[in-house]
Length: 262
Length: 162
Image 1 (cartoon, rainbow over the protein chains, first blue to last red):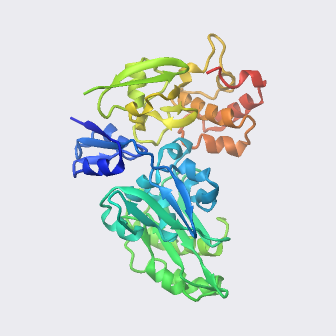
Image 2: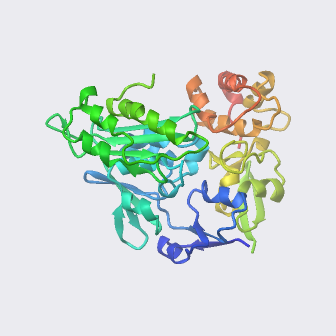
Image 3: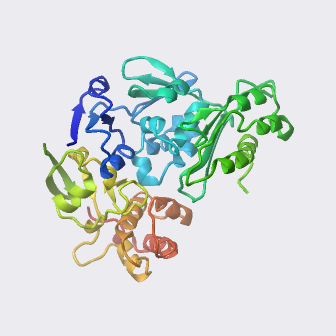
């Protein structure tokens, strides 16, 4: 029998968590498991504390884990993230789905987390510690209080979601890049993929190949050749691993060079 | 243990006892007897359970019922004013925008949320607004047209009194 625990604070919610508990944020992940009679948990933990603050902090922005996709799309401070938030579900889902859910969502979900990863995301946990999002994604242990990201300037940030159904469809893959430049050359570039591994990941081989390169076809060609280096993309009903490998360089080129889809 | 939940449904007070984990759709249909929102997929794919909570579209099958405590819920069942249909409903009927009808309550709610906020949407905005609602009969075209027709209807017939 399922029980619902309502905690006043995230810290209290954290204390009520166990292997047999699920934390309810926007409901889009947990409630579908409830509806389908998932027997792996017998407790839903929810929290009265509002975690929906968006706070600019110098060159970064702190986003509460309860912030929804719709709130991101409506925030002036997060205008750069709006296209990534818009890529998630339809309007009703975007009124419900939160940042916190996005960073724990199983493959092939979590498109927004890909963007957060490319923007040097750091998660703050309910116990007061923080860690790089990249590290958190490996274990996904602990309740996320907020995610802090770097605020890109100009057109440095790129996001692209590839799906078979428009305008709403699940990712064949998603890609994000933060293309910082120094003296006209790419520097300290971060590139992340979604639906190309069990979780959203950064792509070290591509990042290294872009370091010091110019942002044109010649400059990015080594990165395109390394597009799937070290990756084992999933085989699923949306796309085979082979297909994902074949098309990744094409979508990476479009992402990096800002080319239109067609 | 059941949890009491009170909210407004289409402007009238409503109350129910929610089971642990019970979703809002189930409470609406079995708890308070509003059969207008439908159960489709139970996983956020189809949109036929769409209702408005505080004016914004939500998927009622993914809302934990007890979380609507004190909030305003609107369903397709509350759109007509007595025998007078809402402009969207009239446009759906006249434009053959409902075939089997299963997606219709969700489509109407998604469309109402759009028109309440944006009375003169573009075609692309209409398509975006119903992008979370699946229809396997019509091919969407009559639905998009019906929503655009309703938006062009005299203002006093759009927007419910709720």
